[in-house]
Image (cartoon, rainbow, N blue to C red):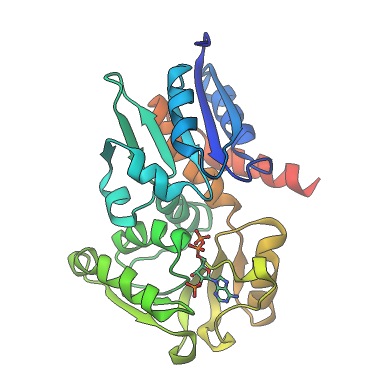
Length: 281
Ligand code: ATR
């Protein structure tokens, strides 16, 4: 049944924990947009069917979370350059002609949170990106577009870091960024900004880098938030760095998706402040 207001959802498995419905409801209220946004738990082998069902019911767009971001990129008929590079999509929109457009707003959200909300410039800085899975792949392009001096991609399985670096070599050259792949054992020197895009803490493993990568005043950013980010934030604090969790990235990637869907930019900084207060309560 087609609903009276435009309908959106977040598809994932698991998805019960997702804050996206709350965030988009606040964006809608604050911008005066009428829309409906719900969680959609999708069977691991049921992503294509879930998309077809949602489109048939009049759905206008969706956010995609773990583990469907790669499938979402493949399912689309049109892909943004960011999706083409990352091979992963977190935002889908059905267009008037029925075609399905895929974008990836994760990297834009990360950059917005670091540069606007945390006030840290990335241009000409030395950066370390920990991880070479889907999370890291989704943000490397927008990080390169900030034209840092250097990005080292460090991963336990170094071949995956090398593949990610090779995929982004042209973009790195365009922005004159030194882009390298390294194993944790080979890491040398310290960095202005360290971004954790690994799932190490979910497995109870320590931070997959030596503390020597931190320098006084480094920003140590975990793309996760809540308990999953805590070991990395504790590690940063113990070594004199400034820690930041990925809650702002979550809100800012949602803001980019909302702007794509609705043509209106929501007050994301206000919603981030509200969400922090809600989670702290
Ligand atoms: P995601 O989509 O969350 O990025 P993923 O694609 O499975 O998930 O990638 C997980 C990332 O966390 C990878 O970089 C992985 O390293 P490997 O490529 O070597 O597997 C990293 N990771 C997971 N557990 C880790 C651990 N215990 N120590 C170090 N890195 C780990």
